[in-house]
Length: 265
Image (cartoon, rainbow, N blue to C red):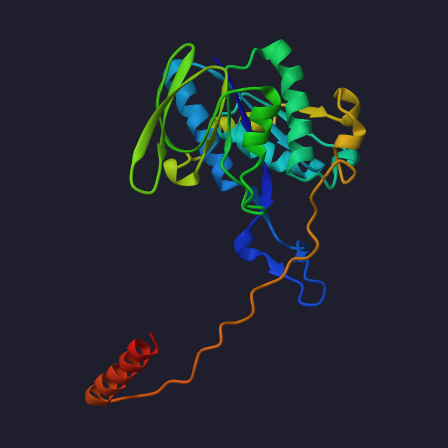
């Protein structure tokens, strides 16, 4: 079985600050991490590899600095990694990003025959939850999003559980398919000492614009129908002045408020 996991490197949102003048994110000095939902998807892929046998490949779109994340993924047990990086990809919104990823996955499928694509439900730096579903639509694949667990994997189908507010639903989907995961569904494994050593011996594949058959007008800033005009922090919550009342005073005031409310009706 060939499993591909879509993984994104994101800034650690617990350390991100907003410039009060420009209202933009201050990224200088902010460490990058593997997007938590994506890391859960990696763990699910590795669990399938452990139980059934599979090749786990990760695909990342981002700057060259993402190499550090790829080494970490290798240290977890990932078999192969691809980094999609090019200045022409810069500024891509979710649709342009999905267009690039789908074009590459179509190319990869010719040599790898992809059985299952896993990804995170959403990225913590955008919270749109759009890339997974858009990739599935562009590839014409069945999809289930925001799953809470993988129930069982067969040779040509997969069963997954999706939580709703008051119930759970078990879906059975034919493969190949795309599934998006949430970080609460598992606890990612620790890096293995042997894998850590091997991670620095392994290479990864770099994919650029010239490697893909994609229309330049559909990617980057040119191909992005949406853009972020401004980012800002919520103003501090202003508390109303306190009024201390005795029990009898509070009861009397409450009765008067109810009388006014009923009378107003």
